Image 1: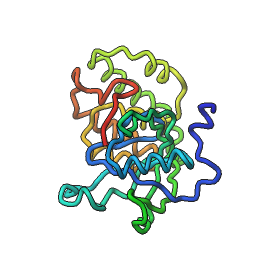
Image 2 (image 1 turned 30 degrees about the horizontal axis):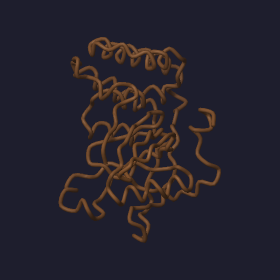
Image 3 (image 1 turned 135 degrees about the vertical axis):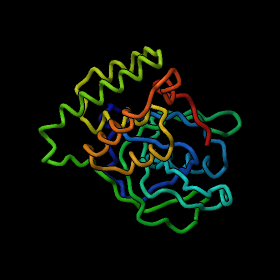
Image 4 (image 1 turned 30 degrees about the vertical axis):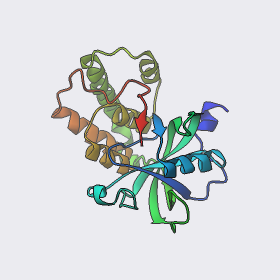
Length: 231
């Protein structure tokens, strides 16, 4: 399967998503997220995805989830729909997988709890590029790329895959998502970025955040691609 095919939603996508709620991780389109799946309900979710369309939707749990983690604590309504692009089933039945972020999706309603894992009806959110900002967009992109590269230098990292990616003429929406997924911003700010479909507003949020943020060697969320996270 080509990269374009991996990044595309299946034509048969109905809007029904498998929810993978996590307390401290926000995923973005265009990003790769390694995950370690070990809870039985999420192992079941993984097996259902592999038998069907390979899609999972990572969602951030809202504050207060600790009191009902084993149940159905509220999640933020905007999630990231991703495709399992590779996986390994471990001897103990758990999974290591690599998830590729595809699209933002907004939860319309959760579906009845007839599976071990949570499911929802969702609508895909496409990036919005307002016409009035078109003339300024290239300049905004240059500013954001410069700030991102400054962070990479301060983090004392030389990441060839990431550098190669940044050398391409990326759309501003793709750049904002790569920056948001790579830099170690607080989780609440990452969720705010995920929830913003206006690409110019998303870039402005990042530029404003960079103005008051002094990166150091711990600035990066993880190497590119990041290390495995556990559910």
